[in-house]
Image (tube, rainbow, N blue to C red; front, side):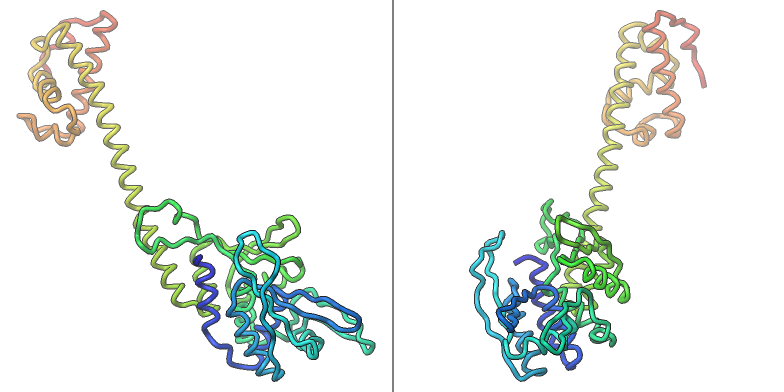
Length: 336
């Protein structure tokens, strides 16, 4: 089960209490996954979803508001993920009333209807209704690529970002729902993919706020734990990268220094060098992997990292002069 599916199931565990909130939830579900067909003068309204629990929630709303029940069946069409899709058929006798009450359609005296593309403001005028409307859309029209690493394994698949999105077929409806999210402090952006309109969220903190609004508190804790684990893992990776970079820098510098020292030994010899440089050459040859900090502790005289770095620059300069045949004995006289 994906994390997105798990969150939706948790959201649907919380019962919708007030009648106004049930109507808002029902309106959101119909708008998000409903299919309306007409045969003669009768309308048929079906909801298609991959979450069976939607049926229970819709039935609870219908029982409270109309004293009726929906029917559940399976969708014959296989979707791209080959997962089971459920078809929830709403009672035909009250379909018109449901569409009108939910702010989805307007009807004339001769039963002609006009679909309302956006969200009826009266459906979401109360704060509780607005949140239950978001809950309905969340459960039926949202998706996510978030993958939790609950076993704390180093699996690159878990580094999928914190992307959560809502997918709609109507741009006016997408715009209205975007405004509804903004009114609840949920920043989002819109994009178009072929004939679909997508509202998406990419920030972990905003996704967390969204979970709180729809009542997914267990999933919120899991997400916060994932965020913390990823931050720790990222910090460790940054430290390791920094450490590896320092090691590489140390090894590269050491190889360059040893090459210079070997060249000096094979040409003019260490005896031509001042005492402090002779000792440094011997210490470096004996400890090729040590950093400058550690080399300062191995020398007989007290010297700083800056001082030892200066001495290595002198050795590199001498080796360079050897290459250029410009070396002179006085270049290597004893210095303090």
